[in-house]
Length: 304
Image (tube, rainbow, N blue to C red; front, side):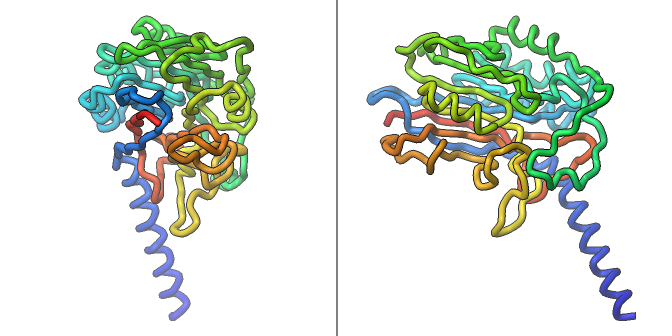
């Protein structure tokens, strides 16, 4: 009987934990961080970093939350991919982004779940360091149509290319890559599009080390990435279990430095600022997050 009570108690605890982990996927959070990289005397520049929405057509609460972010009045939006999770998600996604598309300059890259629909997977694979699974017959998602709609709205497509965007009257130099998780990344050769820009940003969906190294060598002021979901499942005193790429667990989300520790406020240790978003969604086949709320981040770039 005692053994049965123990088993029953563990089962109840597990069910409660699973229920909370599902609830947490709906506890949308705005995080804030400050990055001191602008030239002396420059006024602040506010960048809204969106990532990993993994939107399905029925997620009305998420759509309303994304729409509400326009009230922050950011100077620039950077979307680091994995926006879609269903073949019919394009319309709802554009509805979610509409207030930002109409008012705010932006830039974007694509993730694997902009190209292909997610599929059910063995949950144990999640614990592998890099849980890529080749799909025999992947279901395509409307990535080309999504990119076209974003370009029509004036957002810069950084798919293995460089560009410049004007935000708050200032020129921002951009370099981006296609999704490294699908081995589609090619950091473009050549000089920056505007070496005299106020700010230089690198943009990638998945923060694989090879891409971070290349952007660090390129001399960007900061790199923005997503993909990791912040680990999605985090343990107290331990943090993220995995990052689903070759990035170390301690940099699964938040603001850090690459390749070394976080730069000091004068940027004196030779590292580049790296912001990894924990993202705002999950695969529809794994709708759980634990100690890792879905998020967007308002980054304030300020003077050194």
